[in-house]
Image (cartoon, rainbow over all chains, first blue to last red; front, side, top):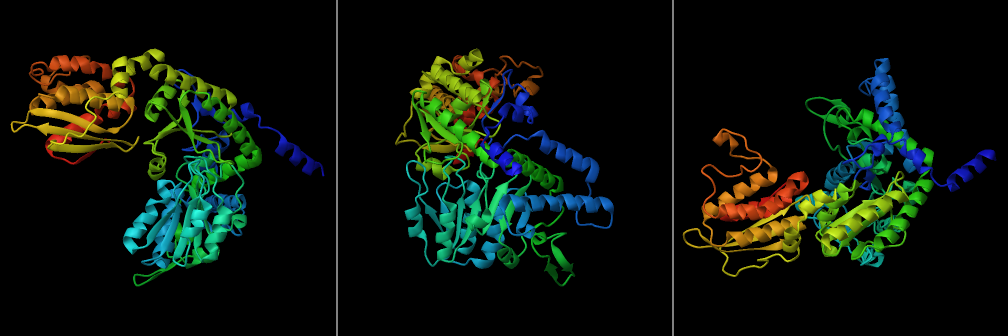
Length: 418
Length: 171
Protein backbone atom coordinates (compact mmCIF):
# COMPACT_ATOMS: atom_id res chain seq x y z
CA UNK A 1 0.00 0.00 0.00
CA UNK A 2 2.75 2.38 1.00
CA UNK A 3 4.53 1.54 -2.23
CA UNK A 4 1.46 2.33 -4.28
CA UNK A 5 0.96 5.64 -2.49
CA UNK A 6 4.62 6.50 -3.06
CA UNK A 7 4.18 5.71 -6.71
CA UNK A 8 1.10 7.89 -6.90
CA UNK A 9 2.84 10.75 -5.13
CA UNK A 10 5.83 10.41 -7.40
CA UNK A 11 3.79 10.32 -10.59
CA UNK A 12 1.95 13.48 -9.54
CA UNK A 13 4.99 15.42 -8.41
CA UNK A 14 6.54 17.84 -10.88
CA UNK A 15 10.09 17.19 -12.01
CA UNK A 16 12.93 18.59 -9.98
CA UNK A 17 14.53 19.87 -13.18
CA UNK A 18 17.49 21.55 -11.51
CA UNK A 19 18.47 18.25 -9.92
CA UNK A 20 18.01 16.41 -13.23
CA UNK A 21 20.08 19.00 -15.09
CA UNK A 22 23.01 18.10 -12.86
CA UNK A 23 22.94 14.68 -14.55
CA UNK A 24 23.83 16.36 -17.86
CA UNK A 25 27.33 17.89 -17.51
CA UNK A 26 27.20 19.49 -20.98
CA UNK A 27 24.32 21.74 -19.91
CA UNK A 28 26.58 23.49 -17.39
CA UNK A 29 29.21 24.34 -19.98
CA UNK A 30 28.91 27.80 -21.53
CA UNK A 31 28.64 28.21 -25.29
CA UNK A 32 30.08 31.39 -26.83
CA UNK A 33 30.48 32.66 -23.27
CA UNK A 34 26.81 32.25 -22.50
CA UNK A 35 24.81 29.56 -20.74
CA UNK A 36 23.80 26.86 -23.18
CA UNK A 37 20.09 26.77 -23.98
CA UNK A 38 19.74 23.48 -25.81
CA UNK A 39 16.45 23.30 -27.70
CA UNK A 40 17.32 20.71 -30.33
CA UNK A 41 16.69 17.45 -28.49
CA UNK A 42 14.35 16.27 -31.25
CA UNK A 43 17.46 16.00 -33.43
CA UNK A 44 19.49 14.32 -30.72
CA UNK A 45 19.23 14.46 -26.94
CA UNK A 46 22.10 15.18 -24.56
CA UNK A 47 23.41 12.33 -22.45
CA UNK A 48 23.12 11.96 -18.69
CA UNK A 49 26.06 10.72 -16.59
CA UNK A 50 24.11 7.52 -15.97
CA UNK A 51 24.55 6.68 -19.67
CA UNK A 52 28.15 7.80 -20.18
CA UNK A 53 29.17 6.08 -16.94
CA UNK A 54 27.43 2.86 -17.98
CA UNK A 55 29.49 2.91 -21.20
CA UNK A 56 32.71 3.55 -19.31
CA UNK A 57 31.91 0.95 -16.68
CA UNK A 58 31.05 -1.64 -19.30
CA UNK A 59 34.28 -1.07 -21.22
CA UNK A 60 36.33 -1.12 -18.03
CA UNK A 61 34.79 -4.16 -16.35
CA UNK A 62 32.76 -6.44 -18.62
CA UNK A 63 33.88 -5.86 -22.19
CA UNK A 64 34.52 -8.65 -24.68
CA UNK A 65 32.82 -9.79 -27.86
CA UNK A 66 29.38 -11.32 -27.35
CA UNK A 67 28.10 -14.81 -28.07
CA UNK A 68 31.59 -16.33 -27.74
CA UNK A 69 30.73 -18.02 -24.47
CA UNK A 70 34.00 -19.90 -23.94
CA UNK A 71 35.29 -17.47 -21.34
CA UNK A 72 33.92 -15.49 -18.46
CA UNK A 73 34.25 -11.98 -19.89
CA UNK A 74 32.35 -12.88 -23.04
CA UNK A 75 29.69 -14.44 -20.86
CA UNK A 76 29.39 -11.23 -18.87
CA UNK A 77 29.36 -9.03 -22.00
CA UNK A 78 26.67 -11.25 -23.51
CA UNK A 79 24.64 -10.96 -20.33
CA UNK A 80 24.84 -7.18 -20.42
CA UNK A 81 23.99 -7.05 -24.15
CA UNK A 82 21.08 -9.44 -23.85
CA UNK A 83 20.07 -7.68 -20.63
CA UNK A 84 19.72 -4.48 -22.65
CA UNK A 85 17.50 -6.35 -25.10
CA UNK A 86 15.29 -7.42 -22.22
CA UNK A 87 15.19 -3.80 -21.00
CA UNK A 88 13.99 -2.68 -24.45
CA UNK A 89 11.41 -5.49 -24.48
CA UNK A 90 10.02 -4.32 -21.16
CA UNK A 91 10.15 -0.67 -22.29
CA UNK A 92 8.00 -1.41 -25.36
CA UNK A 93 5.99 -4.15 -23.64
CA UNK A 94 6.87 -6.61 -26.38
CA UNK A 95 6.00 -10.25 -25.70
CA UNK A 96 9.49 -11.68 -26.12
CA UNK A 97 13.04 -10.35 -26.11
CA UNK A 98 13.66 -12.11 -29.42
CA UNK A 99 11.26 -9.64 -31.02
CA UNK A 100 13.83 -6.89 -30.34
CA UNK A 101 16.51 -6.46 -33.04
CA UNK A 102 19.38 -4.06 -32.39
CA UNK A 103 20.27 -1.87 -35.36
CA UNK A 104 22.34 1.26 -35.94
CA UNK A 105 19.26 3.43 -35.61
CA UNK A 106 15.71 3.91 -36.81
CA UNK A 107 16.92 4.58 -40.35
CA UNK A 108 18.57 1.18 -40.51
CA UNK A 109 15.54 -0.44 -38.87
CA UNK A 110 13.24 0.84 -41.62
CA UNK A 111 15.71 -0.05 -44.35
CA UNK A 112 15.98 -3.53 -42.87
CA UNK A 113 12.21 -4.04 -43.05
CA UNK A 114 12.01 -2.63 -46.57
CA UNK A 115 14.94 -4.73 -47.81
CA UNK A 116 13.91 -8.03 -46.21
CA UNK A 117 10.17 -8.11 -45.61
CA UNK A 118 9.57 -5.76 -48.55
CA UNK A 119 11.65 -7.63 -51.12
CA UNK A 120 10.18 -10.95 -50.09
CA UNK A 121 6.52 -10.08 -49.82
CA UNK A 122 5.89 -7.11 -52.14
CA UNK A 123 5.40 -7.29 -55.87
CA UNK A 124 4.54 -4.92 -58.68
CA UNK A 125 1.20 -3.22 -58.15
CA UNK A 126 1.24 -3.57 -54.37
CA UNK A 127 0.76 -0.39 -52.38
CA UNK A 128 2.66 1.09 -49.47
CA UNK A 129 0.92 3.89 -47.56
CA UNK A 130 2.96 6.55 -45.77
CA UNK A 131 1.95 10.01 -44.55
CA UNK A 132 2.92 13.54 -45.50
CA UNK A 133 4.45 13.87 -42.03
CA UNK A 134 7.22 11.37 -42.58
CA UNK A 135 10.92 11.92 -42.06
CA UNK A 136 12.97 11.17 -45.18
CA UNK A 137 14.01 7.91 -43.49
CA UNK A 138 10.44 6.65 -43.79
CA UNK A 139 10.05 7.86 -47.39
CA UNK A 140 13.24 7.02 -49.24
CA UNK A 141 13.54 3.29 -48.33
CA UNK A 142 10.06 2.78 -49.79
CA UNK A 143 10.95 4.80 -52.89
CA UNK A 144 14.00 2.60 -53.45
CA UNK A 145 11.72 -0.40 -53.20
CA UNK A 146 9.20 1.21 -55.54
CA UNK A 147 11.87 1.76 -58.19
CA UNK A 148 13.08 -1.80 -57.78
CA UNK A 149 9.79 -3.69 -57.59
CA UNK A 150 7.24 -1.43 -59.23
CA UNK A 151 5.12 -0.98 -56.11
CA UNK A 152 3.06 2.19 -55.59
CA UNK A 153 3.60 4.72 -52.84
CA UNK A 154 0.48 6.45 -51.48
CA UNK A 155 0.68 9.45 -49.18
CA UNK A 156 -1.88 10.42 -46.55
CA UNK A 157 -2.39 14.22 -46.63
CA UNK A 158 -2.27 16.49 -43.59
CA UNK A 159 -4.58 19.32 -42.58
CA UNK A 160 -3.55 22.96 -42.30
CA UNK A 161 -2.98 22.47 -38.57
CA UNK A 162 -0.71 19.50 -39.28
CA UNK A 163 -3.26 16.81 -38.42
CA UNK A 164 -3.13 13.35 -39.98
CA UNK A 165 -6.35 13.20 -42.04
CA UNK A 166 -7.80 9.87 -40.97
CA UNK A 167 -10.71 9.85 -43.40
CA UNK A 168 -8.33 10.46 -46.29
CA UNK A 169 -6.18 7.65 -44.96
CA UNK A 170 -9.11 5.23 -44.97
CA UNK A 171 -9.82 6.15 -48.59
CA UNK A 172 -6.28 5.12 -49.58
CA UNK A 173 -6.63 1.66 -48.05
CA UNK A 174 -7.65 -1.22 -50.25
CA UNK A 175 -6.93 -4.81 -51.22
CA UNK A 176 -3.58 -3.77 -52.73
CA UNK A 177 -2.37 -2.10 -49.52
CA UNK A 178 0.36 -4.29 -48.11
CA UNK A 179 2.23 -1.94 -45.79
CA UNK A 180 1.30 1.16 -43.80
CA UNK A 181 4.42 2.95 -42.50
CA UNK A 182 3.82 6.06 -40.40
CA UNK A 183 5.47 8.21 -37.78
CA UNK A 184 4.14 7.99 -34.24
CA UNK A 185 4.94 11.68 -33.74
CA UNK A 186 5.99 14.15 -36.45
CA UNK A 187 9.56 15.38 -35.95
CA UNK A 188 8.66 18.74 -37.50
CA UNK A 189 5.16 19.56 -36.29
CA UNK A 190 4.89 17.43 -33.17
CA UNK A 191 1.61 15.96 -34.42
CA UNK A 192 0.76 12.74 -32.59
CA UNK A 193 -0.70 10.25 -35.04
CA UNK A 194 -3.55 7.94 -33.97
CA UNK A 195 -1.41 4.88 -34.59
CA UNK A 196 -3.70 2.45 -32.79
CA UNK A 197 -6.61 3.33 -35.08
CA UNK A 198 -4.25 3.49 -38.07
CA UNK A 199 -3.07 -0.05 -37.31
CA UNK A 200 -6.60 -1.37 -36.84
CA UNK A 201 -7.71 0.04 -40.20
CA UNK A 202 -4.60 -1.32 -41.91
CA UNK A 203 -5.08 -4.77 -40.44
CA UNK A 204 -8.68 -4.76 -41.61
CA UNK A 205 -7.40 -4.77 -45.20
CA UNK A 206 -4.62 -7.24 -44.41
CA UNK A 207 -1.74 -4.75 -44.41
CA UNK A 208 1.29 -4.82 -42.15
CA UNK A 209 2.00 -1.74 -39.99
CA UNK A 210 5.35 -0.12 -39.25
CA UNK A 211 5.53 2.78 -36.79
CA UNK A 212 8.51 5.16 -36.64
CA UNK A 213 8.63 5.93 -32.93
CA UNK A 214 11.78 8.10 -32.81
CA UNK A 215 9.95 11.17 -31.54
CA UNK A 216 7.52 9.26 -29.33
CA UNK A 217 9.65 7.12 -27.02
CA UNK A 218 11.39 10.07 -25.28
CA UNK A 219 8.04 11.63 -24.38
CA UNK A 220 5.45 8.95 -23.71
CA UNK A 221 4.93 5.37 -22.64
CA UNK A 222 4.72 3.13 -25.70
CA UNK A 223 3.06 -0.28 -25.63
CA UNK A 224 3.48 -2.11 -28.92
CA UNK A 225 0.90 -4.72 -27.95
CA UNK A 226 -1.68 -2.09 -27.14
CA UNK A 227 -0.92 -0.22 -30.38
CA UNK A 228 -1.01 -3.58 -32.16
CA UNK A 229 1.61 -2.54 -34.69
CA UNK A 230 3.73 -5.15 -36.47
CA UNK A 231 6.99 -3.20 -36.50
CA UNK A 232 8.08 -0.35 -34.23
CA UNK A 233 11.41 1.42 -34.66
CA UNK A 234 13.36 4.06 -32.75
CA UNK A 235 16.88 5.46 -32.33
CA UNK A 236 18.78 5.37 -29.06
CA UNK A 237 20.36 8.80 -29.36
CA UNK A 238 17.06 10.69 -29.23
CA UNK A 239 16.25 8.83 -26.01
CA UNK A 240 19.33 10.18 -24.15
CA UNK A 241 21.25 7.07 -25.26
CA UNK A 242 24.41 6.66 -27.36
CA UNK A 243 24.59 7.12 -31.11
CA UNK A 244 24.94 4.07 -33.33
CA UNK A 245 22.25 2.02 -31.64
CA UNK A 246 18.60 1.65 -32.55
CA UNK A 247 15.78 -0.77 -32.24
CA UNK A 248 13.55 -2.72 -34.54
CA UNK A 249 10.66 -4.37 -32.77
CA UNK A 250 9.00 -6.94 -35.00
CA UNK A 251 6.26 -9.43 -34.27
CA UNK A 252 7.97 -12.78 -33.95
CA UNK A 253 5.90 -14.57 -36.58
CA UNK A 254 6.83 -11.84 -39.09
CA UNK A 255 10.53 -11.73 -38.21
CA UNK A 256 10.71 -15.50 -38.66
CA UNK A 257 9.52 -15.24 -42.25
CA UNK A 258 12.06 -12.57 -43.21
CA UNK A 259 15.37 -13.32 -44.96
CA UNK A 260 18.64 -11.89 -43.55
CA UNK A 261 19.50 -8.22 -44.08
CA UNK A 262 23.28 -8.59 -44.18
CA UNK A 263 25.42 -11.69 -44.31
CA UNK A 264 28.24 -12.34 -41.88
CA UNK A 265 29.12 -13.77 -38.53
CA UNK A 266 26.58 -14.29 -35.78
CA UNK A 267 23.60 -14.49 -38.14
CA UNK A 268 24.02 -18.07 -39.35
CA UNK A 269 23.06 -21.49 -38.10
CA UNK A 270 25.60 -23.27 -40.30
CA UNK A 271 27.85 -22.36 -43.22
CA UNK A 272 29.29 -24.56 -45.96
CA UNK A 273 30.49 -23.31 -49.32
CA UNK A 274 27.39 -24.84 -50.87
CA UNK A 275 24.80 -23.43 -48.54
CA UNK A 276 24.31 -21.51 -45.33
CA UNK A 277 21.31 -21.56 -43.04
CA UNK A 278 20.14 -18.64 -41.01
CA UNK A 279 19.97 -18.22 -37.28
CA UNK A 280 16.60 -17.44 -35.75
CA UNK A 281 15.65 -13.81 -35.05
CA UNK A 282 16.99 -11.56 -33.68
CA UNK A 283 20.49 -12.96 -34.43
CA UNK A 284 19.52 -13.40 -38.11
CA UNK A 285 19.40 -9.60 -38.42
CA UNK A 286 22.49 -8.80 -36.36
CA UNK A 287 25.35 -9.82 -38.65
CA UNK A 288 28.83 -9.01 -37.43
CA UNK A 289 29.90 -7.72 -34.05
CA UNK A 290 27.04 -5.52 -32.89
CA UNK A 291 27.22 -2.16 -31.11
CA UNK A 292 27.61 -3.94 -27.78
CA UNK A 293 28.49 -1.03 -25.51
CA UNK A 294 25.94 1.21 -27.21
CA UNK A 295 23.22 -1.36 -26.52
CA UNK A 296 24.27 -1.39 -22.87
CA UNK A 297 24.18 2.44 -22.93
CA UNK A 298 20.71 2.39 -24.42
CA UNK A 299 19.61 0.08 -21.61
CA UNK A 300 20.99 2.61 -19.13
CA UNK A 301 19.14 5.44 -20.90
CA UNK A 302 15.87 3.52 -20.66
CA UNK A 303 16.50 2.83 -16.97
CA UNK A 304 17.15 6.55 -16.55
CA UNK A 305 13.91 7.81 -18.13
CA UNK A 306 11.92 5.09 -16.39
CA UNK A 307 13.40 6.05 -13.02
CA UNK A 308 12.05 9.56 -13.58
CA UNK A 309 8.81 8.36 -15.13
CA UNK A 310 7.66 9.03 -18.68
CA UNK A 311 4.36 10.40 -17.39
CA UNK A 312 6.17 13.07 -15.40
CA UNK A 313 8.56 13.82 -18.26
CA UNK A 314 5.58 14.19 -20.59
CA UNK A 315 3.75 16.49 -18.16
CA UNK A 316 6.83 18.69 -17.75
CA UNK A 317 7.31 18.94 -21.51
CA UNK A 318 3.64 19.78 -22.06
CA UNK A 319 3.98 22.62 -19.56
CA UNK A 320 7.01 23.94 -21.46
CA UNK A 321 5.18 23.58 -24.76
CA UNK A 322 2.23 25.58 -23.51
CA UNK A 323 4.46 28.26 -21.98
CA UNK A 324 6.60 28.49 -25.12
CA UNK A 325 3.58 28.62 -27.40
CA UNK A 326 2.32 31.66 -25.47
CA UNK A 327 5.72 33.36 -25.40
CA UNK A 328 6.44 32.80 -29.08
CA UNK A 329 2.99 33.94 -30.13
CA UNK A 330 3.89 37.33 -28.62
CA UNK A 331 6.73 37.78 -31.14
CA UNK A 332 5.55 39.99 -33.98
CA UNK A 333 5.14 38.15 -37.27
CA UNK A 334 5.83 34.72 -35.81
CA UNK A 335 3.72 31.84 -37.10
CA UNK A 336 3.73 28.40 -35.52
CA UNK A 337 3.28 25.54 -37.98
CA UNK A 338 1.64 22.52 -36.42
CA UNK A 339 -1.08 23.29 -33.89
CA UNK A 340 -2.93 20.02 -33.38
CA UNK A 341 -4.19 19.27 -29.86
CA UNK A 342 -2.07 16.69 -28.05
CA UNK A 343 1.04 17.52 -30.04
CA UNK A 344 4.48 16.75 -28.65
CA UNK A 345 6.89 19.36 -27.31
CA UNK A 346 8.13 20.54 -30.69
CA UNK A 347 7.52 24.03 -32.09
CA UNK A 348 8.22 24.70 -35.74
CA UNK A 349 7.90 28.34 -36.65
CA UNK A 350 8.58 30.94 -39.29
CA UNK A 351 9.10 34.64 -38.82
CA UNK A 352 7.77 37.09 -41.40
CA UNK A 353 10.62 38.52 -43.47
CA UNK A 354 13.35 36.47 -41.81
CA UNK A 355 14.73 33.21 -43.17
CA UNK A 356 15.00 30.41 -40.56
CA UNK A 357 18.72 30.16 -41.19
CA UNK A 358 19.16 33.79 -40.14
CA UNK A 359 17.02 33.13 -37.05
CA UNK A 360 19.22 30.19 -36.06
CA UNK A 361 22.42 32.20 -36.50
CA UNK A 362 21.19 35.02 -34.28
CA UNK A 363 19.82 32.57 -31.69
CA UNK A 364 23.13 30.72 -31.71
CA UNK A 365 24.97 33.90 -30.76
CA UNK A 366 22.62 34.10 -27.77
CA UNK A 367 23.59 30.57 -26.75
CA UNK A 368 20.23 29.20 -27.92
CA UNK A 369 20.54 26.07 -30.08
CA UNK A 370 17.59 25.45 -32.40
CA UNK A 371 17.36 23.59 -35.67
CA UNK A 372 16.79 25.49 -38.89
CA UNK A 373 16.14 23.82 -42.19
CA UNK A 374 13.85 21.28 -43.75
CA UNK A 375 14.26 18.77 -40.88
CA UNK A 376 14.65 15.90 -43.35
CA UNK A 377 11.01 16.42 -44.32
CA UNK A 378 11.10 18.37 -47.57
CA UNK A 379 7.63 17.24 -48.74
CA UNK A 380 6.16 18.65 -45.54
CA UNK A 381 7.93 21.98 -46.15
CA UNK A 382 6.39 22.06 -49.62
CA UNK A 383 2.98 21.25 -48.12
CA UNK A 384 3.15 24.36 -45.95
CA UNK A 385 4.74 26.49 -48.64
CA UNK A 386 7.92 27.28 -46.72
CA UNK A 387 11.52 26.50 -47.72
CA UNK A 388 12.43 25.77 -44.14
CA UNK A 389 11.37 26.38 -40.56
CA UNK A 390 13.10 27.03 -37.28
CA UNK A 391 12.35 24.40 -34.68
CA UNK A 392 12.62 24.44 -30.92
CA UNK A 393 12.12 21.12 -29.18
CA UNK A 394 11.92 20.53 -25.45
CA UNK A 395 13.24 17.68 -23.35
CA UNK A 396 13.13 16.70 -19.70
CA UNK A 397 16.03 19.04 -18.84
CA UNK A 398 14.60 22.24 -20.32
CA UNK A 399 13.16 25.02 -18.19
CA UNK A 400 10.79 27.97 -18.45
CA UNK A 401 13.82 30.25 -18.03
CA UNK A 402 15.22 28.74 -21.22
CA UNK A 403 11.97 29.48 -23.01
CA UNK A 404 12.37 33.09 -21.83
CA UNK A 405 15.91 33.10 -23.28
CA UNK A 406 14.49 31.87 -26.59
CA UNK A 407 11.87 34.62 -26.50
CA UNK A 408 14.46 37.30 -25.81
CA UNK A 409 16.70 36.00 -28.60
CA UNK A 410 13.74 36.15 -31.00
CA UNK A 411 13.19 39.75 -29.91
CA UNK A 412 16.80 40.40 -30.95
CA UNK A 413 16.05 38.88 -34.36
CA UNK A 414 13.13 41.31 -34.72
CA UNK A 415 15.36 44.15 -33.62
CA UNK A 416 17.99 43.38 -36.27
CA UNK A 417 15.59 42.63 -39.09
CA UNK A 418 13.08 45.33 -38.17
CA UNK B 1 27.28 39.58 -29.36
CA UNK B 2 25.13 42.21 -31.00
CA UNK B 3 28.18 43.87 -32.56
CA UNK B 4 29.16 40.71 -34.37
CA UNK B 5 25.59 40.20 -35.53
CA UNK B 6 25.36 43.82 -36.67
CA UNK B 7 28.55 43.26 -38.60
CA UNK B 8 26.98 40.24 -40.34
CA UNK B 9 23.61 41.83 -40.89
CA UNK B 10 24.64 45.27 -42.12
CA UNK B 11 22.01 47.59 -43.55
CA UNK B 12 23.20 46.94 -47.10
CA UNK B 13 22.70 43.21 -46.65
CA UNK B 14 19.29 43.58 -45.06
CA UNK B 15 18.29 45.89 -47.91
CA UNK B 16 19.47 43.52 -50.65
CA UNK B 17 18.02 40.60 -48.72
CA UNK B 18 14.59 42.19 -48.50
CA UNK B 19 14.60 43.74 -51.96
CA UNK B 20 16.84 41.57 -54.11
CA UNK B 21 17.87 43.21 -57.41
CA UNK B 22 17.59 41.25 -60.66
CA UNK B 23 15.25 38.68 -59.15
CA UNK B 24 13.80 37.58 -62.48
CA UNK B 25 14.17 35.19 -65.39
CA UNK B 26 15.44 37.07 -68.46
CA UNK B 27 13.83 35.58 -71.58
CA UNK B 28 17.06 35.92 -73.58
CA UNK B 29 19.31 34.23 -71.02
CA UNK B 30 21.62 31.76 -72.74
CA UNK B 31 23.29 30.24 -69.68
CA UNK B 32 21.74 29.04 -66.47
CA UNK B 33 22.55 26.79 -63.56
CA UNK B 34 20.83 25.70 -60.39
CA UNK B 35 22.52 25.90 -57.04
CA UNK B 36 21.38 24.24 -53.88
CA UNK B 37 22.51 24.02 -50.32
CA UNK B 38 21.00 20.73 -49.13
CA UNK B 39 21.75 21.48 -45.50
CA UNK B 40 19.41 24.46 -45.29
CA UNK B 41 17.26 23.78 -48.34
CA UNK B 42 18.26 26.97 -50.17
CA UNK B 43 17.82 26.77 -53.91
CA UNK B 44 18.47 29.32 -56.60
CA UNK B 45 18.89 29.57 -60.34
CA UNK B 46 21.38 31.98 -61.90
CA UNK B 47 20.69 33.25 -65.42
CA UNK B 48 23.36 34.80 -67.61
CA UNK B 49 23.02 36.46 -70.99
CA UNK B 50 26.45 36.31 -72.58
CA UNK B 51 27.54 38.13 -75.73
CA UNK B 52 29.50 36.27 -78.39
CA UNK B 53 32.78 37.46 -76.84
CA UNK B 54 31.74 36.29 -73.37
CA UNK B 55 30.77 39.71 -72.03
CA UNK B 56 27.90 39.50 -69.52
CA UNK B 57 25.04 41.53 -71.00
CA UNK B 58 22.58 40.52 -68.27
CA UNK B 59 22.68 38.60 -65.01
CA UNK B 60 19.70 37.65 -62.88
CA UNK B 61 18.53 34.98 -60.48
CA UNK B 62 15.48 33.32 -59.01
CA UNK B 63 15.06 31.42 -55.79
CA UNK B 64 14.77 31.83 -52.09
CA UNK B 65 17.14 31.71 -49.23
CA UNK B 66 18.45 33.49 -46.18
CA UNK B 67 19.33 37.17 -46.07
CA UNK B 68 23.01 36.38 -46.70
CA UNK B 69 22.45 34.25 -49.80
CA UNK B 70 19.84 36.64 -51.23
CA UNK B 71 22.02 39.71 -50.66
CA UNK B 72 25.05 38.00 -52.13
CA UNK B 73 23.15 36.91 -55.27
CA UNK B 74 21.62 40.35 -55.61
CA UNK B 75 24.92 42.19 -55.36
CA UNK B 76 26.63 39.69 -57.65
CA UNK B 77 24.12 40.14 -60.46
CA UNK B 78 24.44 43.92 -60.16
CA UNK B 79 28.18 43.92 -60.62
CA UNK B 80 28.44 41.24 -63.33
CA UNK B 81 26.74 43.27 -66.02
CA UNK B 82 29.21 44.51 -68.61
CA UNK B 83 32.02 42.39 -67.20
CA UNK B 84 34.05 39.97 -69.29
CA UNK B 85 34.04 36.31 -68.39
CA UNK B 86 37.61 36.61 -67.09
CA UNK B 87 36.59 39.51 -64.86
CA UNK B 88 33.61 37.58 -63.50
CA UNK B 89 35.82 34.63 -62.63
CA UNK B 90 38.42 36.89 -61.03
CA UNK B 91 35.71 38.45 -58.86
CA UNK B 92 34.51 34.98 -57.87
CA UNK B 93 37.99 33.96 -56.76
CA UNK B 94 38.55 37.14 -54.78
CA UNK B 95 35.12 36.97 -53.18
CA UNK B 96 35.53 33.31 -52.30
CA UNK B 97 38.90 33.99 -50.70
CA UNK B 98 37.41 36.89 -48.76
CA UNK B 99 34.53 34.79 -47.38
CA UNK B 100 36.66 31.85 -46.34
CA UNK B 101 39.44 34.06 -44.99
CA UNK B 102 41.96 32.19 -47.08
CA UNK B 103 44.11 33.68 -49.72
CA UNK B 104 44.18 30.84 -52.17
CA UNK B 105 46.88 32.56 -54.18
CA UNK B 106 49.35 32.91 -51.36
CA UNK B 107 51.36 29.90 -52.53
CA UNK B 108 51.85 31.41 -55.95
CA UNK B 109 52.78 34.74 -54.49
CA UNK B 110 55.07 33.19 -51.93
CA UNK B 111 53.82 35.32 -49.05
CA UNK B 112 50.96 35.26 -46.63
CA UNK B 113 48.51 38.06 -46.49
CA UNK B 114 45.32 36.99 -44.81
CA UNK B 115 43.93 40.43 -44.19
CA UNK B 116 43.31 41.96 -47.57
CA UNK B 117 45.45 40.06 -50.00
CA UNK B 118 42.57 38.52 -51.90
CA UNK B 119 43.79 39.51 -55.31
CA UNK B 120 44.83 36.91 -57.84
CA UNK B 121 48.34 37.10 -59.25
CA UNK B 122 48.86 40.34 -61.05
CA UNK B 123 46.07 42.09 -59.13
CA UNK B 124 42.44 42.51 -60.06
CA UNK B 125 41.52 43.86 -63.49
CA UNK B 126 40.46 47.50 -63.67
CA UNK B 127 37.49 48.55 -61.58
CA UNK B 128 37.19 45.26 -59.76
CA UNK B 129 38.91 46.67 -56.69
CA UNK B 130 35.89 48.91 -56.19
CA UNK B 131 33.53 45.94 -56.51
CA UNK B 132 35.54 44.01 -53.93
CA UNK B 133 35.26 47.06 -51.70
CA UNK B 134 31.46 46.85 -51.99
CA UNK B 135 31.50 43.11 -51.32
CA UNK B 136 33.35 43.72 -48.06
CA UNK B 137 29.91 44.00 -46.39
CA UNK B 138 29.69 40.22 -46.75
CA UNK B 139 33.08 39.62 -45.11
CA UNK B 140 31.26 39.24 -41.77
CA UNK B 141 30.47 35.62 -42.68
CA UNK B 142 34.06 34.74 -41.80
CA UNK B 143 32.98 34.90 -38.16
CA UNK B 144 30.14 32.48 -38.95
CA UNK B 145 31.71 29.46 -40.66
CA UNK B 146 28.42 27.65 -41.33
CA UNK B 147 27.17 30.71 -43.22
CA UNK B 148 30.04 30.92 -45.72
CA UNK B 149 28.15 28.60 -48.07
CA UNK B 150 25.17 30.94 -47.98
CA UNK B 151 27.33 33.80 -49.23
CA UNK B 152 29.11 31.80 -51.92
CA UNK B 153 26.21 29.72 -53.28
CA UNK B 154 25.16 32.16 -56.01
CA UNK B 155 28.79 32.70 -57.06
CA UNK B 156 29.47 28.99 -57.40
CA UNK B 157 26.26 28.74 -59.39
CA UNK B 158 27.30 31.61 -61.64
CA UNK B 159 30.62 29.90 -62.44
CA UNK B 160 28.76 26.63 -63.09
CA UNK B 161 26.50 28.48 -65.55
CA UNK B 162 29.56 29.86 -67.35
CA UNK B 163 31.12 26.39 -67.43
CA UNK B 164 27.91 24.96 -68.86
CA UNK B 165 27.18 22.83 -65.82
CA UNK B 166 23.51 22.52 -64.99
CA UNK B 167 23.70 22.01 -61.26
CA UNK B 168 25.92 22.83 -58.35
CA UNK B 169 25.60 21.86 -54.74
CA UNK B 170 27.50 23.32 -51.81
CA UNK B 171 27.23 20.13 -49.81
